[in-house]
Amino acid sequence: MPEKQRAAAALEARMAENGFWDRPEQAREVIGEANRLKNIFNPIANFRKRLDDLQAMIDLIQEGAEAEVTDYVKEAAATATVMLADLDKLEIESFLTGKLDKSNAIITIHAGAGGTESCDWAEMMLRMYMRWAERRGFEVEVEELMAGEEAGLSRATFRVIGQYAYGYAKAERGVHRLVRISPFDANKRRHTSFAAVDVVAELADDVDIELNEADLRIDTYRSSGKGGQHVNKTESAIRITHVPTNLVVTCQTERSQHKNKERAMKTLKSRLYEKMQDEKRAEMERFYGEKGDIGWGHQIRSYVFQPYQMVKDLRTGFETGNIQAVMDGDIDGFVNAWLRAGCPMKRNKDIKIEE
Image: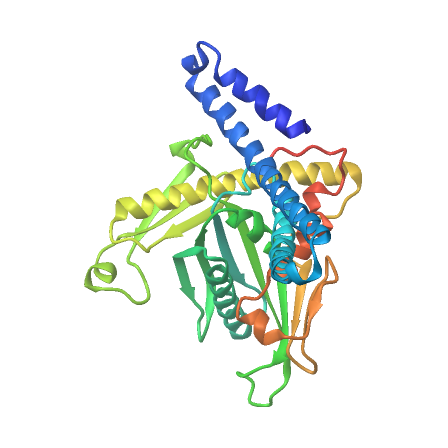
């Protein structure tokens, strides 16, 4: 029996013991871990069963007369084609084993240096990620849109809802660089723009992050942008500042101030949790001499529109010349290449990181 399957069986044995629910919090952790392990090996076991069925069909084809097996050959070929695609997906999902990988993702895009150019780039990236989420069947909820001074967005925060949303989206965390002929430059010169993407996992209700009310500064204000009469005439928008870390979150999508505060608090807890993980990773990277990929000034990907057309990930070397497809949300090639290469958190197998 594989190691993970044995571990899941051991956890299920604990779940059957008397008094298992005497400690509800600990019981939920055991159940969550058992489900996580089963979600890893069950798809593999199902694929192996399909593979055995395909092999049985091939054996029948080899034993039958040529005139009798034509339809079976076509069926076997079609089945094999589907299974190859499923195997590719299974391989990618095998890398999504972190505690929070199945969670929803909270993505924030910040325009960088470059003024109007970078604000326009931030808005282009928002469209790209929304198209990507749509392609994968994820749901998107926009939490905050802060317009740039002349065009585009200076900041955007949105939630991507779906299974493994964070597992896939975390590949996008870092600085993205754009090179193009500026539509805002009358002299048609090339400009370089930057936008930073931050991705955190939306914490489940059973993940406990303690917040001291004295450390929070909560401000209310009127929502900006498009909205109904109520949205722009009442101070329903919420801004929460965590004073010790200077983390700021806002939410203005709901009509109710109470609901906006609830969503903003959840986002703040998620970002605090990610900050804790970043600090752990930074300490281990310092100890082992690793250089982190995530940080302002360490671009992870370049999008070159002029003088040639190329999008290249600087971490994996994956590239494509079809920039239109990328800007329409076709970024799975970059995400999958990053996962296959082994994300920075998994490079050193001797380092154990709690996610």
